Image: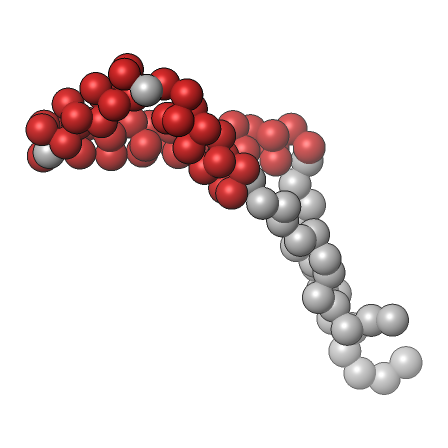
Length: 87
């Protein structure tokens, strides 16, 4: 055999536990970020925040409907398709 033998290693595979932990950490980071954003909006626009809270308390069903609609739109399915060119 002539030439040089080169061994290539692929990307290390993540374990299921590692993926679960990464998703959990991402979820907590998103939650903290949303809470900080809400606090910032409340501090910067106090009159708007009071009006929004008053609307949510006086008309809870439309507010709930808008929240559910936002969740549905946000949770659109992700494509788990492979873009490899193999047949």
